[in-house]
Image (cartoon, rainbow, N blue to C red; front, side):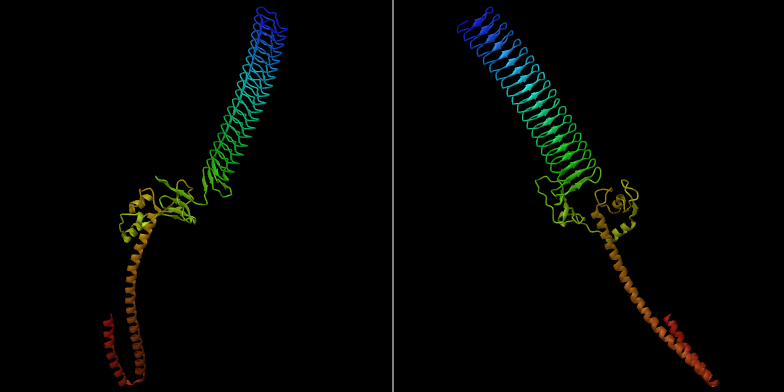
Length: 498
């Protein structure tokens, strides 16, 4: 006993350095100072403080007050009201902390309980670790109730399943092998599920993940919600990147963002606003128009773009221009009008190597070109089409890139050239027709003249017959002679005209 008063060193080779009312009652026990401290175990040590008790072998209390170690090889650094009731327990400090499992550790804090073996609480308040090898870094009101589970900090977080992890935040909970990084009111219940942060998010599927945001749910296996608000990935391997009020419920379905989009079909894709890909393999894009656009069938590609659509390729930076009354514009210059007319590019400045054509020759090619009705193999045989095949068209005119396609511009060019050929034929026939009409008019005039002369002759004959009937025999002779005379010029008339 080095000094002080009311001190007792009753154990062999025991030591009390000073203070008041201290007791070292076992072999090699030491009380350095302080008051009412007891080192009652083999080799136990109380460095100082008040009313500290180290009554088991190899235990040590650095200081503080009302600390007690009731199991071998425990250590309390200081603080007050701390208790160790299991072997190799350690409390660095704080107050009202309790260890009841082997190798448990509390760094500090208040009202902390470690009941799992090898469990650790770094500090904080009202934290409890009951799982073996479990950890709470700090914070308050955190609970780790299964082995290898971890809560890094924060408040009122729970890691209640094997290897569950909550990094921090408030009121978060993690299931088996799952993790919540932080935020508040987040839950990762599926095995290997993850909620990185945000609030009121849920990852309940196997390997499901929510990156952040609010009120998001990844409720199926391998489902993912990146963030945003009120988004749900309920299909297996489905993804919602962000936005709000989006749902990906099909297997492998995707909504990258936007608002009020639904990808309900397997492998479907919906983006923009109010896009509904309700069928398998459907792609639906909705522009900012406040109206739903729905997929009509499986494996369809649907785009609503009230400002127009542009397709093309370029090797430089470009801001495409979509002209007035143009719905689909292309980098080639061809476009589909808002009225539904496909318009080919035909600018003279974009062409070269002009060669004239013989319209009559083109017309002859059209005449010889086989034209049939048929159906495409991909369509029902009741759907009929009319036209040439590309092989015959190419053989007749040599137009286009190959003998398997017919460009509309080439088909219309052939038709126009054939029309010119028909016009030439028609003009020639019209000339011939006019000549024939003139000839016919000439002939008709001659016929009319002949008809008049014939009528006059007939009238003369009838008059002569009447006179003959009235004449005597001598008169008859006169008439006969007259008739002979009349007959001679008549014979010449018909001979000449014929």
